[in-house]
Image 1 (cartoon, one colour):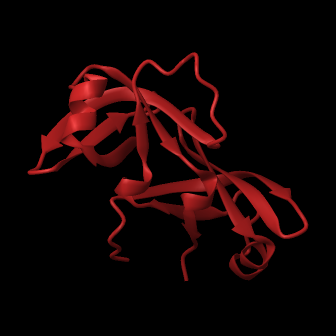
Image 2 (cartoon, rainbow, N blue to C red; image 1 turned 120 degrees about the vertical axis):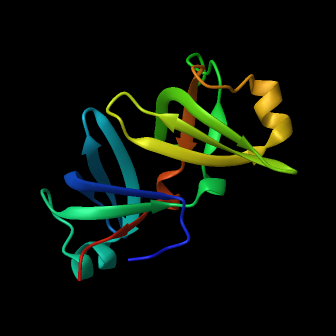
Length: 142
């Protein structure tokens, strides 16, 4: 499968919380790294999303926000993934920042170069990737 999303996470479903219209699906990525997705109940049925199902979670890099030293901030975003900056690849206007999470999963974000400077993002710096659960797309093998 080839996709334009920069973040393609392979994992297995560790929990499903069913609602009337949507479900919250927790995906274990390895180690202690987890990602939560909000999908429709129709998607749960048609994709066969149950605990133990292997899935691919897609998140486009521009949908990943970054915070530095945000341990005292509470957000409504379901996924606040603390890690360490692995690399910063500057472009003309934006930069691609890659974080490594404690379990080894890597998360890429595209932010402005100004944000990289303001947040002091450079290799070795602690940072948090913030991803709304509704921005996580799940897929299963055909």
